[in-house]
Length: 315
Image 1 (cartoon, helix red, strand yellow):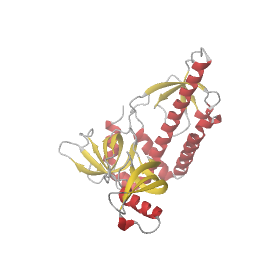
Image 2 (tube, helix red, strand yellow; image 1 turned 180 degrees about the horizontal axis):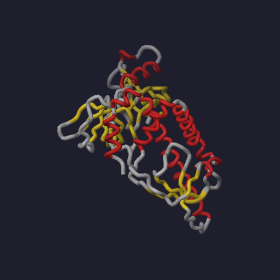
Image 3 (cartoon, helix red, strand yellow; image 1 turned 60 degrees about the vertical axis):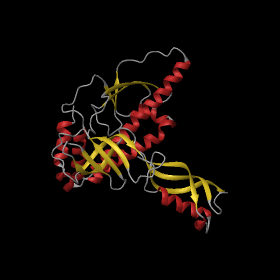
Image 4 (spheres, helix red, strand yellow; image 1 turned 45 degrees about the horizontal axis):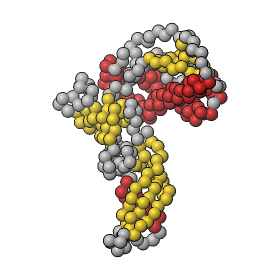
């Protein structure tokens, strides 16, 4: 995930470097030392600006200085269970382990749960799920332990008890997430407006669907999470995640005993809705990224990958 982050560090300024504006000197040093490297549990892509700095001249080394500096940067941080698309197969070991590398963002990912994926070939493109990411200081790549399993959820079925003061689309707490989700839904509609790209998009949805046989569910379908206010939401991947639809259980919520419990309940409800909205957004982003990576020719040349996903990773 690409984010903006503020980092604090200390730079050593040599006498020969002390010419020109100090802000330019600091920015050049920051770029030389950090861009394209790991630091502060992240992989730094770009230095945006210096927030503050404090130069202290050294008493031991005349002309030298130490700068305590705070800077704003664009960086990559991979969360647990985040899906990475475009991982290129670099090595296939005799014991079945697969090593993938990233070309734009530099990472080395070790995949140990694909021993039976015998058809995979060097330079093929995979999608992988992050188990653990390590950012060794000033290394030029992220070290990742990953899984080939991008389809199954660890918790296939879960209930969220929701009690909100207003409907989801009326609450400021969800406005940014709803905007992002609707933007992704709009982008998906554009992709599907063309018959050729729609066919590939639908195929990716089929590949990512976690069941061989769709299960039945004893719940009712709510056509928009934005209209939801109170009740039990069933987090279950029996329906697609590429829209606003959710499943509601018919079991009723217990009565709130007092206002304190009610406030705590609403706080938990807000976090649950955030989680559900973010899950939908990440799924839509995954579909869009797959469409960006695989044109028709590349999609066909990766038939062995899709076959493995559908035969080995579905429930």
